[in-house]
Image (cartoon, rainbow, N blue to C red; front, side, top):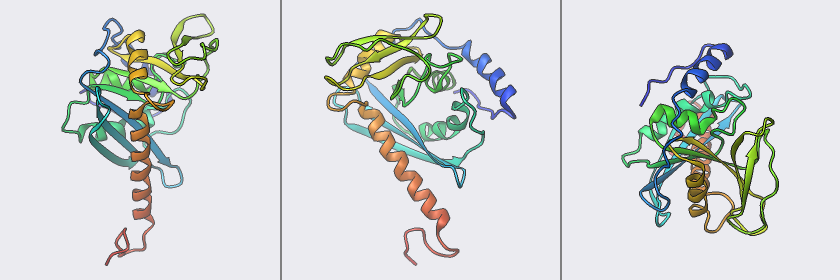
Length: 240
């Protein structure tokens, strides 16, 4: 895992992003869907207290059973700048991943990889710094365009930049339900990323990895903010 430094300002962040983007591997297919482990990561914020909570939830890729989960809580160390969101999230997400004793396998981010204005979203950034295969599965298409895919589960259409570059796919995971937006991060190709996403969505629109990680990071944030709000000398859970 690479050493992570927090940029001093926006210019340094963009320079670091450019440096790391050159390390993305796109010529590997990635792990076969339904094999090994899949780990969902997600974050939740308390902007008033500058607190961020991250969760990493490891699933068995074949059964989608939870194998292990971990959380980390930290201070937001970088301001919100469009296109540079990963710098706010990466330190705490890495802390959660490093707490795991299981091999994370494929990492699934609630966000973007190649489908990013600078072609280096959270999934790509996290993949490069960890060396793990990674994909992004987002709820909306960000700034990109697409033709609606067919109405059946598994139907997809290209997610396109203004210049026509294909940066991902709009993928229907439930019949007649709004698609999700899949993009490669690191060491995975787009067909494999789509296949993993379908394996991870047997019942709902969003991947089980994301659903578990979202619930866990929200719980971790509630517990952290409750602790910071407790009166001096009081136990966070109300016990003496």
